[in-house]
Image (cartoon, rainbow, N blue to C red; front, top):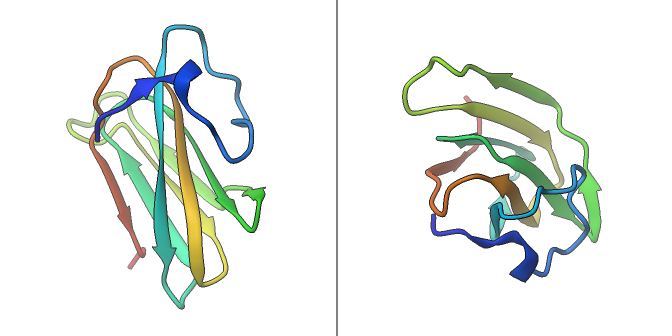
Length: 104
């Protein structure tokens, strides 16, 4: 995913963790499946917020390892089925690999 300078992004709600100056971010719309849970995995460090119905949703789980090649962290959110917005912020690089899946 291509990211933009964080100060140029219009976030739906302010990120829970204020991004440092000079970092990157993005927003993306996603469809939450009927099961209502999403797992978001990132290739590098960045903050992840998920917004649904105009409110930030608290994460339901987290895992991360600095020594795992290809995946820096994964977060899970319990949501209602329907649309949601994923907000990424605080990334140090202009690109990031991201996977948004229904957990098994």
